[in-house]
Length: 264
Image (cartoon, rainbow, N blue to C red; front, side):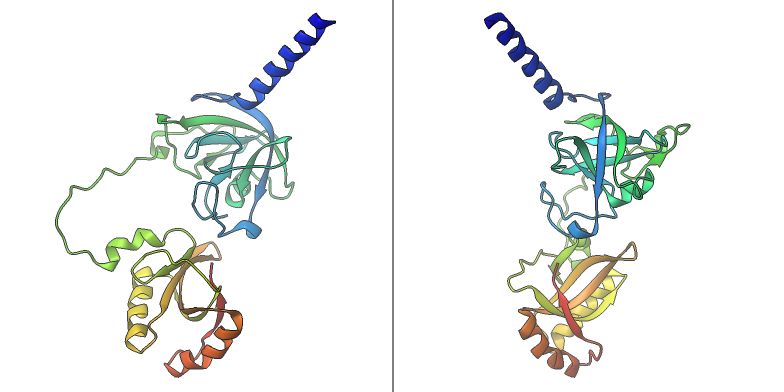
């Protein structure tokens, strides 16, 4: 009886080890169910601190290190896509992956909602090959040299005058920023939208113009609309009630179409 109990404990330990430590290195594969997440979580912070962008090619995995690159294949149709791990999940034990909506679209699993997939590690802990997120294909397609992601070489340090346009990368993730590119910690939740732009430089210049008109608390909200990144010019950080009271003030400065908008 004692011998049988020891054997059962050993088997249990081995099964846990396989589940928990099933993938460690480049080339390791695993099959299981994948789900996807979208609108409800768009703009929220992921486990690695980024803002979740359902139009980007990322995924949530319970264990793999952040910035691990995976090739995910839908076993039903053999469509595959490359994604990067930036979040934790899924929270249903029988699923192994949670894809962004854009990635789910690439492998044609949106209608089904859940798919049986194979995940293969392409890059992990500094080893392997970073393939451009969103690279995709079918059973007859392979990853080629043009799909390889090249890390940008650091620019040599030079003494220059910093301008706002040199900080454009700071507006990349969905969220609210100052017109200088620093992230804004929202306290009250609502602003007043004055305009929106597809060009970041125009949004920054418009923000400076608004400053000169006496609207000193101006922000740029980086977001998405119809799969395209846009930059909304917002005034203030108010409660919803206070924001409504200040709409007339903004309109009096020449922004006739101003309206209350929730900060991201």
